[in-house]
Length: 382
Image (cartoon, rainbow, N blue to C red; front, top):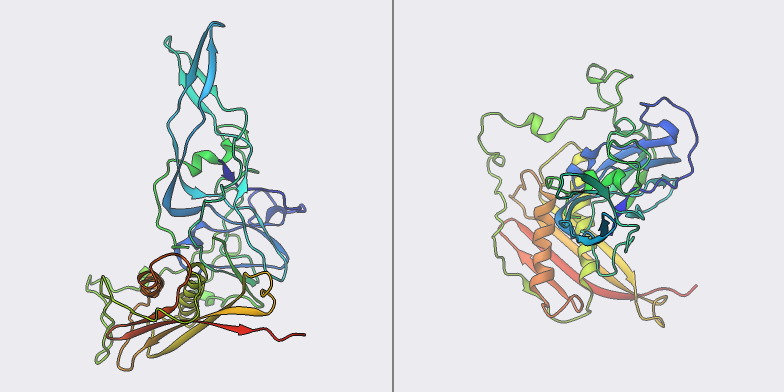
């Protein structure tokens, strides 16, 4: 069960060894995973090399037992410790001017392991092949954030091979499996967005350019960007809303009002539209260089064709979500995670008998009102 980066993309030549767009590959800075709404740029068409994706959910992989023969007579079986994976490698992504989805890629080799006999002699060995070279059917990745891709100067980038990839040299082994295992296994867990797939949104036009005084030298490959923490007050005092604006209070165990009837939907679709809604709010604030969510209503709708083979082209399910900031309130430093968490209380505390038959409901606090409705409609016949 080995997952790694697949470099099957057809690319051309050009550029020096340290170029961020060498061989037409754009190497993306790992810091994009530090925000729920990562933004990248490249000149369309291009091929993105995405950095390793950290995950909060650890995966333990059993390393195969290896039968061995010592001194041509003594047979034994080596048993190694399980491998703990905290990051996943992604396939390169060919970006045209439309949309695409990155995937976990596969290898056909296990990482090498070293063992020592009773005489102190060390040996390196590995299984002859991967017994499973694709994620099992019941394996589910956490939902990933929306990746926003714009047409413009590649950004944020790092130099070629700044992170492990199969096309890069490795000091451990040239083996396909070993090229990445040292980075994927047994590394400290880093916090990542609570994210099955990456969705891509595309815009024409570059990102806003910085002032000339703040611009980086052209020869610099890594674009330094300002972090939210850079502008925070150093006094140590917590942020407070503007005078007269009431801050939202989020109880630890809220009690939503459940509809318990009506059109039933499924949890996966609800979670998708919830994450899209909270992502859109967060991205809109970042574009305006703001962090606070003012009074108003944000709404999003997701339509999914019926899974019934006789109805899938005629009937669709409609998932609607609203988040409302009440008058006199201000959500200081809007938080994507809190936004999604509050919505999911409605999903998971209502209709608790399974993943399907979710009807939605309402969750209302002192300053924020959350609402989920499930409906259906008919596609017009052409």
